[in-house]
Length: 163
Image (cartoon, rainbow, N blue to C red; front, side, top):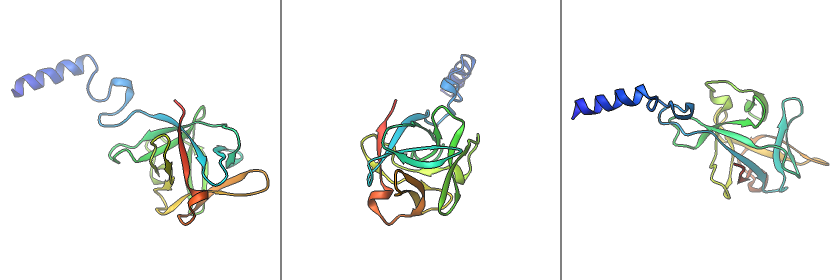
């Protein structure tokens, strides 16, 4: 039986099936997918630019590409703004920014969340556990930063499938 398995693995490798060759996804990892996030306090959508920072906007401006991190059970992601090379990064315990994505992101570019469409989730920094993306109200839009998980409305995001 072992010889048969080795022969199958060798044949699969020859045609590019094993080792994550399908779609360039490493073995055991999930493919990236897209979501939008609507804040539950102001019903505005997560948006941002590297220049202007993170904010919420009444209309949908951005889709976010979620790249699952291998070995995390599908709950930790690198979050990339679609159409750019910029990812969310926790730069301080109270601040998140969009910065160039890294190929092997460390904790500053890793975020824990439930990405199931239709659900509500906290978007928690892995660099600063307990600190979550929070919409801070202002006159015409809300800035988005990190704060300790205390307030349900400003810190919860409805997950929308944008595939």
